Image (cartoon, rainbow over all chains, first blue to last red; front, side, top):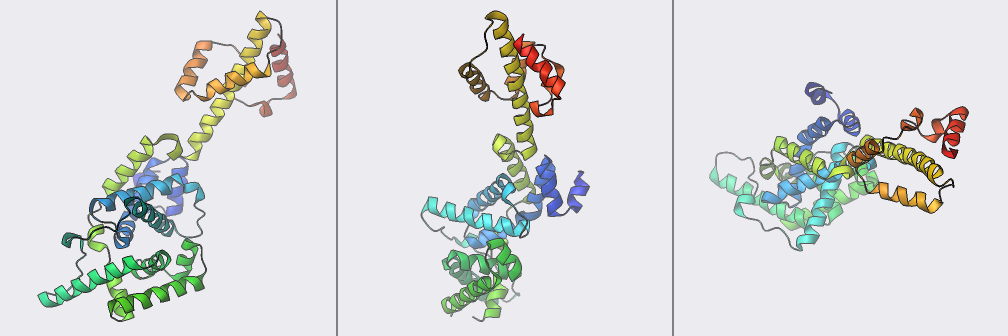
Length: 182
Length: 134
């Protein structure tokens, strides 16, 4: 498979090529899914240099475990679930929550008014903190739905649950966030 | 904060920090680790090829062993002695196995070099057994 063919290929084709020994296909999968996976992991709580490490670890686990990928959900959704497991394992090892610094905060897109900008930044920071307090399943469902824009069918397939259960987790997550954020 | 506002803000979660992760660099790092971590991370075809090569080597060495035993002592080999040879082979990697084969310079029937027992015809099997009996 040439570089141009890889760029135009779907995930399933790239996975097939990787299984056939095409290293370039694996590289293309990484390039393609790094931005979304990094956003997911950052929202989960990974900070600074840790973010690079956990994203890398998620990809490594995905390629090692490719035989277990059944294509019930998309490769990207499967990656997110692996990413959540990596974050859980890293959290267990460090036995502490990551410390937020001012440089770590995400700055929301806002207008030129400094006051509005500061308010939006504060709101995003509070949401970030509140999301990190959610139980793992609610956090997964909330991020997959609200941050990544996945539909409930895809979320349910990725998390091996029912569509109804995914909806309930999302409802509880939003309820909890509303309460937390006032 | 309303549900709508929460969802609007959630779209921005992690965006700035994620922008610092370079996809090209990540691809290079992941590929380097997959290479460095060896067989566990290799695609299935590589593992199955190695298994096939190892099985063929065991078959060839078994034939060589039978032939040499029969030539020097006239008696059949024991199960224990064959098991010991196979266990020793498991510790070798592909290159070491190839070097060992070269060093044996054994002229086994050609088909034993490339196929398994299941692939042999009845006459080929008979020929193989006869060569093992000396």
